[in-house]
Length: 358
Image (cartoon, rainbow, N blue to C red; front, side, top):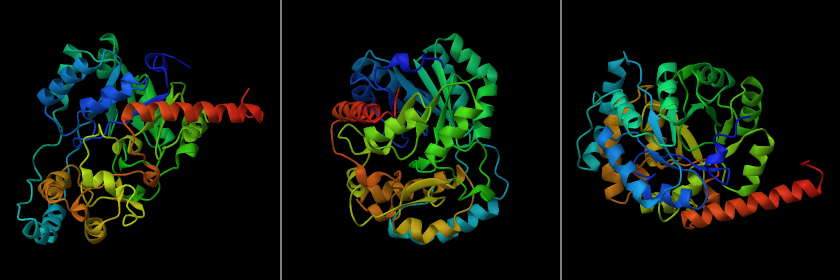
């Protein structure tokens, strides 16, 4: 297995790129400085906005970091379903005294412009979500000196990632917070997600490229488990969401361990694509009726989510979180990396003492 990825950072700990203002340069820098791999999230930003964050991050650390890019989405034909959902959300718009967003605000998330920036100003690592880039794109990034990763939620998707020429695959288990990185958004697959340990084992046997495990990981012992299952590193999102460097709203951070929010669910309520969030009023009321229409629903509900956040109303926000959210620790990001690394070492020592590792 290639060590090109893990040679970039001392600890096998990757901070997941969390779009929507969470993965800010301060968070990525703190993680990278502590020996993990910090990540910026380019999703929902302009190409220039992404570039400015890269410049800011480079001013904060000289260590390797990554940038995550969303793949363009196919055209969505059933506009009537979006209109019906917009009608159902009219009461929300009135409550928060805002207008609904324009569902036709764009489907490609500035993909080509972002690639141009990343080729002109190469970064150490680039990852992709919601699909697989072409071999030409991946080869261009490799020639620029960039290591590439692509998310997969099944072994079949991982094979597509390998065939396209990516350097590594991110195995995203169903436990993960935020959007599932499925390559095709098929409603018939709703509820059929694979648990992380099973997924890592399946992907490890299907491909030869390195695997990064993602989904519900909150403790060093869990990192040890996915490494033992064949992963080269672990990617953690929710674990870093509660850190002071995270750009998440304070009410979102507090909700992670608030007994009022006892569980998570995969829902299309906020974006039209399956994404794991803490169960709140908005999810309960609108989740059953949200159509499979991404990014139309994301654009439609964006003003509602922003208004709810401004009002400090957790019941109207997209409280993205993985299944391990109750294990969140309000530690500085750099300290959290060190604690996780110490827990990992302790778990490895314990397994070795029992003959579990040779």
